[in-house]
Structures are given as structure tokens and as C-alpha cells.
Image 1 (cartoon, rainbow, N blue to C red):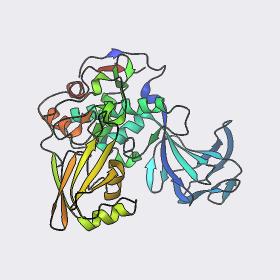
Image 2: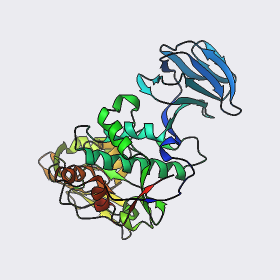
Image 3: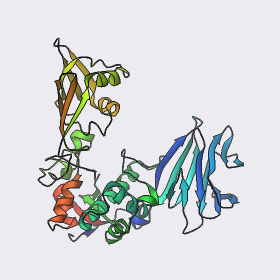
Image 4: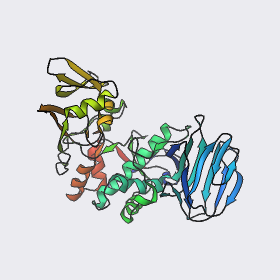
Length: 369
């Protein structure tokens, strides 16, 4: 790994900072369990509200004047459930480290937020986002990218109720269940290390497969000012089955799905992606047999048909009989580290620092404390 500089980004060790991850938002009861007894606190003044015995599939839900936890009701809009040190909470069948903050929203929903150390968060993200069997140097690169992104996003959203989503809107986080011996090792070996550019935390985006070229964060996410996120040519990810992909969908299925959103794609012959001059707006345009054009924002198009069906915004489609044949490259948003590229680089003997330097050129590794 490259030698790294010490950058006083924060006053304490980054892995010991607590971040806040959204686990659920629900009007109906969510089941919570614990390994042992739990203490309940009021987050506003840290007042102890109660101590309960071990929770076993206890429902938590909003009530008109507060929060219900099993048979207990609390006249408060916020309750923190704190397990005994060294034990876990289970939320909807998934185990988590840290505490669970329950917040009753103005929309009569209950919001569940996992308050967890960034180090514990990262060792879950590493193998939720990358197969644990992959080379250790790739896992270490993933740990540094995940830690950097988590800290950057936490700073961006400071003052909000939560800082991170537990899914691909940020990084996939599945608690203890997605940890592995190798993810914990990768996290430990890179403890406190982050990516910076000009002593600023880098938005260290990553994705599965770029298909030959990563893209600019400014173009894809409208995030400017980071030279190391301008995009690079990638010759390493051709081993991914998503390097080039094909998908056959019935024209009727496509048109029926989009019709529910008010977009008329009936009888289209071909589909292309169109980007405006500044790349700010991405549209899907379908040309019909009579020459007229159907238009839909790419986000609505992908989410309606499924992001596991249409894997990127880099695709085209042509008609064959009653079907549309989609052809595209890569999987994901294409910004930052290409994970399949990182895998190949690690297999060729490149270290985590070299992998990160390749995908975030001009960045530095920093000890964030």
C-alpha cells in the first residue's frame, strides 16, 4: 500500500466515530430481538426510560402519542434501545452492532436508525458489496473506499436524522450477517485510512463493472471539484459477465410497465439514450414505426423495468419481432472504483494503494485522525 500522509480531518479516530444508518421506515410493527436485556433511553437528555428483559420478536410501532415497544408504551417521539455491551440487536431478522434509535415521524411512521461505529459498519459493507473470496488487496481497497464514502456522506448530511441508507442509494449494509473473517481483516489492516484530494475527503464512489471506462462524478452525480473522479480507461474488468450484456424483453411488457407511469412506448422499434450538452439530463428515446418518438427519464425507465434488468444507463435496444433486444455495457453508475477491475488488478499483484491510485488518480491515502 502507498505510504500515507496524516491529515487532521477529525479529532478522533474515524473508525471510532458513530454514523447513523436508516434501517426501516414503517407504519406497521417491525420485529426486534436482543441477545440479552436492553436499556431504553431518551436521546434528548440521555434519561433512562426503562430496562427490559431479553427481547424476542417484540414489535415496535408508532402510536398516536409516542412509541410502542412490545407491551410497553412511551410518551416520547424518540427512544434509543441499547443492548448490553458485546451483544447484538436483531431488526426484522437481521443482526446489528450498536444501538437502535426509534423516531416517530410527523407522518405517523416509525423510523429505525442503527447507530454504529464506522469501523463496524465498514466490515459489514466490504463483503455486502464485494465477494469475500476475492483477493485481500481488493477487499482492502474496498474497505478504504467504503470508509471514505461513509465518512464523506456522514459529513455531508450532518445535522440530519440519519446519514446513510442501508442499500445501493449509498452502500449495501446488512449488519453482522454480511461480515466475514476476511472483511474484518481487510477493515483492520486499513484501520483509519481514507482517500483525500487536497486534504478533502473524496466521495469514493464505486460500482461493479465499468465495461471499459469509468465516468466523471460531475457528469453522473453533478459533484464537481474532484480531479480524481474524472474517469479513467479500464482494461481490467472484461472478466465480468456484465462487461457486455444482452436482455430480451417483449415490447408489450415494456410498454405496459411504462404506461403505468404515463409514458407511451407502444410499438417502439428502437431505443437510445440521449444526454444533453452538460450531461445533466439523461433521457430514453424510443422511435416508433411511424417515426414519432417516445421519451422517458432514464431513472424512471430503469426503476420501472428493474435495475437488475437494465443494469446501466449505457445501453441501446433494437426490435426483433415482438421483442426488444437490449445491449449495454457494465453494471452500476461507472463512477470511481470498478470492483471487477480491482479484482483483476489484485490478481495481477497490485496492492490496494495501487488499485485506488488507478481508479482515483491524484488522490492520497490519509490517516483520518
